[in-house]
Image (cartoon, rainbow, N blue to C red; front, side, top):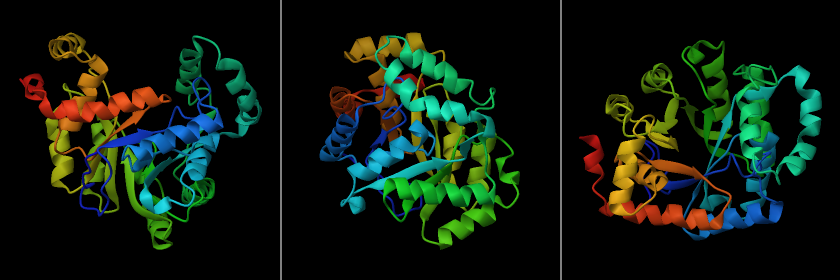
Length: 303
């Protein structure tokens, strides 16, 4: 396993991180014992970077991670994301979630159905974003309780859009949280370049989590790197370059998914690439991709 620094921090995560959005999801979440075994398997393979969010599984993802790393906290770099909360009208939905998880899991199209619900949750006012000081203070305490730790290494503001920095009292609240010792470094998860540009010029934000693919201009990443910020990739996909990626993958005997994963790993400005899985076999395949990424001519995709 390779390890790289996250920007100008003292964190050195594994180049492959474990994303946990699916660990306890409605459609594909694992039984508790299997989820714990998956985290243990990742650790055995040298993965020391675990990424989660307080909204994943309505907090269940953090709780499973807390149980899995109990007694070994210092072996891991923990990151969580905060900023979504269930709205006042979502009470019945929350109560139904445990039953929905059990009911949907056996069905073939459960993941698609769950994704539809999730993608429309904001529009339907089931969840909403909240970066108010009061909510952030409560949310980090709840996350720490579930994770069974007194600090996280990175706390991201979850899925921020342009203008997030104007939230009243936001950065003062982050400063208070950091001085309390509950968070070592702050960052944002974002896809919009305007939001990423804010992170480049903000001293409080030290890490950005975003997507990466061969068609995305390098200039944005160059600016982030020049500002000393760490870059964590949370999604790898091609956005219109499927034919090129398919040809590259067939030429070198790998899957398109692994071609994209390898491309992200290969970029020197990337600190870590998050891969979410519920399968130990897929986990091993992802780890094998680290080594193939070193030998394949990914420069061809930049031509």
